[in-house]
Amino acid sequence: MFSGQGTGDSLGLIVLIAACALAGVSIALLIFAVGMAARRSSAQMTAIIDDAQRTLRRERAKNESAGEGALMGAVAILLPLAKALPLDSIRQSLSERYARAGWPGGYSDDEIFTMSLLVGLVIAVPLMLIIAAANPLAAPLGLIGILVGPGLVSSHYNSRGVEREKSIGRTIPFVLDLLVLTMRAGASLQIAMERVTIDYAKHPIGEEFRSTLQDIELGVPTKDAFRNLAKRVPLPVIRGFVDDLIQSEELGRPLADTLERLSDQVRVRRVQDAVDTAGKSKVMVLVPGMLVFIATLIVLFAPFVMRFVYSDEFN
Image 1 (cartoon, helix red, strand yellow):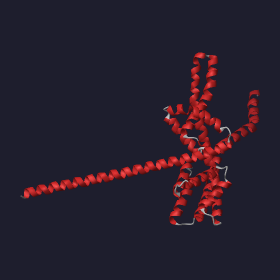
Image 2: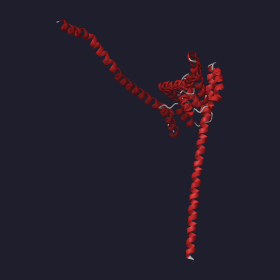
Image 3: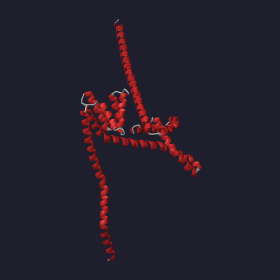
Image 4: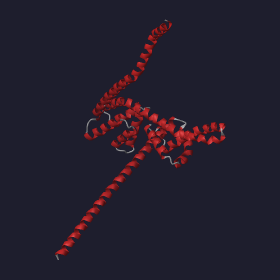
């Protein structure tokens, strides 16, 4: 009797353990599924916001330039072919550099890749004609020029991205001062940012602030809109600006005081960077200075040396 009761208790314990394990696995799978769904939803939302920003920039580019329509027509012809090419690494590299440049023109990643192939064709066709004039059988070698197109486009947007970040870094102290003055006058942060977009309409910082305001108008939470700004402009000063804004809102600190303190920190950092640059310049100038000094000594003492040498020969 006791043996049967012990067996029943053991069986019940095993069933209980199995049920707990099954419940734990189910909960873990549920959490994983919810996390994946949230990540997928966040990625989709980010893609939608990026597409909206590119569309707005494309409309501005069309209004500012009459040649955009002709360029887009040529790109549309080659777009199906470009999508079919298995060159994902080149496409990803162009996408990163294009994003760093601030999406000028508002093109999609596929359109930028197609544009790079179009540039390559513009180089390849004259190259093929030149080679064909020398040796018709070697004319297909001119197709190598197509590979030059993505490199040129990538280098172009990389240079634009570097200049854009430098321009934003130089301007951000004045932008912070403008934000502080506007908010000290009683305006809200969004109104102060609108003031920046007006005063810096043709500047990258004005365009980025305009994009942030457009994100907020599209329904993006303010914190996420500023985080998107930090992603578009991955500069330490912009990340500090965004982090301080978010922290001030969470802790209830006055934004004007936070921005004023950040402006002072940026100015001190710029002075330190200028001192470091001056120190490096001294080291770089030292070697040419020594060469000039040695050349000057040679010019000054060469006549005496030559006279001494020739005087010994004559004697």
